[in-house]
Structures are given as structure tokens and as C-alpha cells.
Amino acid sequence: MIKTAQTINSLLALVMLVCLTSSATAGRSITQEKVNQIRPGWTTEEDLVRAFGPPATKTVCPPGEITLDWFYASPISARNYIPVIGPALGGTHVTAWELWVVLGANGEVKRYIAFGHYVNGETKRYIERDHYSH
Image (cartoon, rainbow, N blue to C red; front, side, top):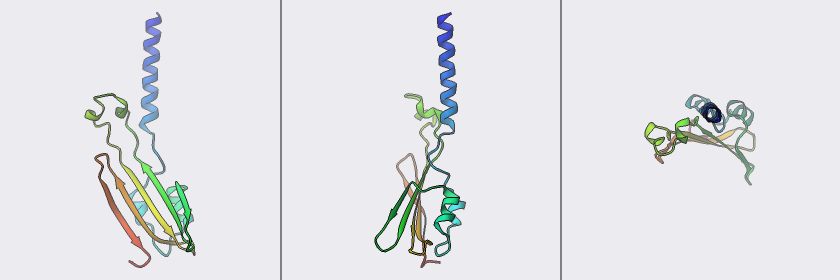
């Protein structure tokens, strides 16, 4: 009887772990479509927060500029937690995005860069735009 209860508890714990980790993310989604909507000289901090949520960091720079940074990691698969065979099952495929934005003194985007970070250590710069390169 005690052995059956332990087995049931173990199965319940495993099911809960799978449910919780299958939808775990860090930050709001950063997608190519959302990033493409950023327009230097037009987009404001309020527009960015509406699209991406509050930034992970906000830094005030001396010449009246503000830098904002967002980070998003794709959902973590439960396979990440399986020792030894997890990576063989594709459990380590986590993609992360980073968006770095500089606002001018007028509160509008001056420039921004979006990066993709991949499990193999590769980082790709997807978009880089500034107020001068329309």
C-alpha cells in the first residue's frame, strides 16, 4: 500500500513538472513581426512597452538618451530535465531573443538592434536600424 502511494505521488510530481515547465518562458515574446514595427523617429517608449512589456533594464545615459533592453527565452521543454538522454531527445533547444533600444531626449527611438541566441552558441544579429538609415 505504501509503495503504491509513493508511485502515485512520484507520477503526480512528474506530471506537475511537465505542466509547469512546458510553458515556462522568460519575458514576453520578441518576434520578427513586432520588431519590424519599430520605426526610429516615430516609435516611443510607451509603444515599446505595449508591444514587449516592461524592459528588463532601463539606463539613463549622459547626453539625454535612455537605453532599454528586453530578453525572451523560448519555452523550456521538460526534456531539458531528463539526465543524460535529455539532449539526445532535443531537450536543449532553447532560443533566446534580445532587443536593445536607444531612445533620444524626445522619447522616440533613435536606434535598435535585435539578436537571436541559439543553443549551439551562435548569435545572429537580425535587425539594426537607426534614425539615419531609413
